Length: 312
Image 1 (cartoon, one colour):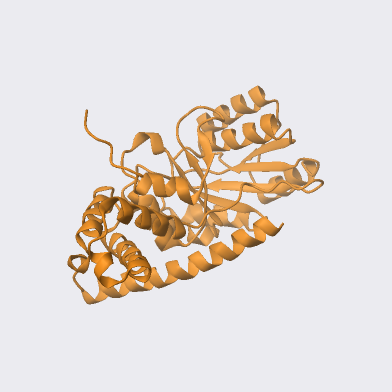
Image 2: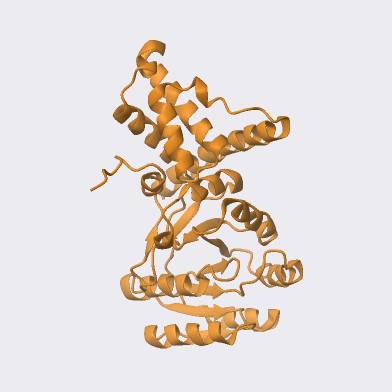
């Protein structure tokens, strides 16, 4: 419990920093202020370029480098900070990046209490496969009783896929068509430690379907809702998805398809804008191996590796 409290306090501090960064980004964009990256020392200016090359939003990259510069000044003084070597500057910047990344603990399973988690997000981001990974981990590794519930009645292929996973894992699957179906299923699964809910994927612009989904999720006051997004999605589209899905009140962000891209900056930019902790990272199709709990250090490694790999 103490660890969870410490994590909550850390996330609160991080979210306050993200609020400040988001406000600055809005002001810079509104006023058309030019980037001030030329004020950075050479070592950080080079790292700024690395961040932008990794598709970190330029204004986010600038703010992170400025934080790292202040940390160097606090430790070494103004003159020393201007001539800091590249390796040390990278180390400081990686620490700054890690400090800016809010992460969530794994789905908490308490004895005698049913935990409900739902995955929401647009079509094609891997919600169903991710749900299977979570179910497999809880069932096979944690030895907990799991049930699957799907609200996706639009695509029979998705239901069939989930049915196959349910059979392999030997867990029950229920298809809910109405609010009453949902209530009935949850009453029936009271003995389960974890109920995972799959939801239909659709265009973020489909406000009618999103409204229907919200009506169902509103029946679950304690649901842990993960907004699933693909790391291959363009940064601007990620921002739009986050805005469109805000009415569903997601409590976590979950990124998939990290194995299908070579740039990870949009993950960081999205975290800055959405201000939700990151829960899991999907790294492939294997169930359940290709799903890992997100950590700030892991994301920092993706955004700015410890050392640049030399070309063969």
